[in-house]
Length: 163
Image 1 (cartoon, rainbow, N blue to C red):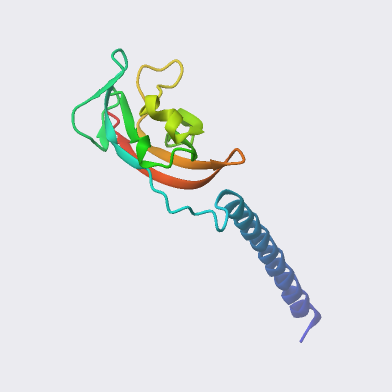
Image 2 (tube, rainbow, N blue to C red):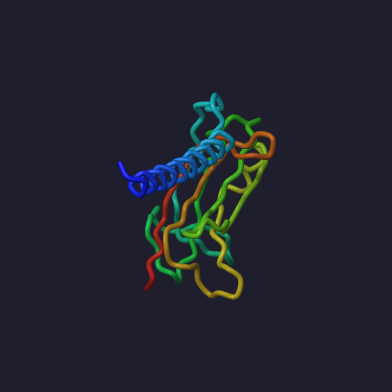
């Protein structure tokens, strides 16, 4: 084997080692994040009853019509949660997230029995906008422990059309 061939193999081998090391670092960071946000042994088995997502009248602060999973940009919508379906002393919150992962509405954190007056959680229109942005919205009810969400108790997805 010539010295040139040996040097080329050495460079390829070192390049492979660098990529493998970067891959292991990325995987390790991902696993650490997963363990931090989805703590092992934290599952309570409790499920939140999300009644549905409905059209919302911000003036009357009431929902109307049947539950839906698709809305127009001009529609304002809200999720309805039956907080009595959860143990009274459970610390929970409910949040709306848009396509970009930005929070677009929140209730809590508080004990489930303290949220009985906040069973309607509307999505918020972004500042300086007339309508909600098109895309997929996620509504999540989470159990909170030490200020960190540790378990998803319920989830709904809504699509907002561009038109």
